[in-house]
Each structure stands twice: as structure tokens, then as C-alpha cells.
Image 1 (tube, protein in one colour):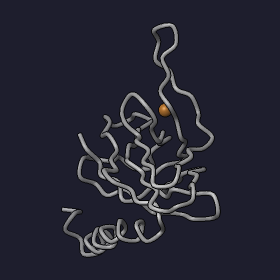
Image 2 (cartoon, rainbow, N blue to C red; image 1 turned 90 degrees about the horizontal axis):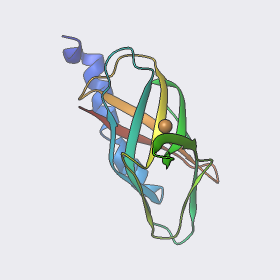
Image 3 (cartoon, protein in one colour; image 1 turned 90 degrees about the vertical axis):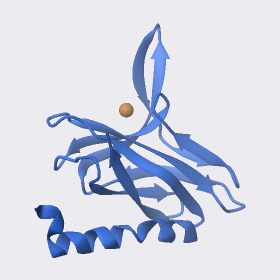
Length: 143
Ligand SMILES: [Cu+2]
């Protein structure tokens, strides 16, 4: 089975080190996950809780992942009873504040997966903050 391949196991151990690095940078990320979708679906959504551990505001400007053609910051909006999505150009985190991306609200819109992601698969999404900080975050694929 592919999971048992030594190179793949090595990749998983490297990814498990990612959260520690995120905390050193002053912004920590908790509960980062992506909802599994049926094969052929061209968009997936990612959720997480961001926390600013510094005394300065931090601004999330963009995100990217080698697993997708494009990652955008979106917000679910309901207008005239219809749910739609709006692009958010940035997310500002006040000092010591948390910001939650959750179903029905803000999400990372993951466009055109480059491979099929199944529950349990590793996935890294890079979060890009103002000032040049880039945090690689390990997301968990869940059912
Ligand atoms: Cu969206």
C-alpha cells in the first residue's frame, strides 16, 4: 500500500513538525482541517482557528498550497435567502485575538485539487501574512 512507502512515511513525519514552527512565528493555528469531497469536485473548503500571540496586529493576506491550483480567502454570505460566497482580501487579527474559519462563515477556498484527497491524507497550506511571514500549516482531511 502506498501509505507504507518509506518516502511517504518520511513526508508524514516532516509534516507533523509543522505546528511547532507555526507557534514560534507569533501566530498559532489550531484545528486546521479540510472537508473530504467526492472525486471530481473542483473546490474544497478549509477551516481553522488562528490566534495572534503577539502584541501587534497580524494580517493574513493570502494562502497557497502545492495540492491546489489556487487558494482564496472566502466568506459565506446569505443574500435574499441564497447562500453565496464573497472574496475577502485580508483577515486582520488584533493583538492576542483569535479568528475562526468555520462552515457557514469564513473558509479557505481550495480550487482544483491536483490529486484526490481522502480522509487522513496530509495536506500543507501556506498562510502568508503582511510583513513576509509565511506559515506552513498541516491541515487534516476529514469526512
Ligand atoms: Cu468559497
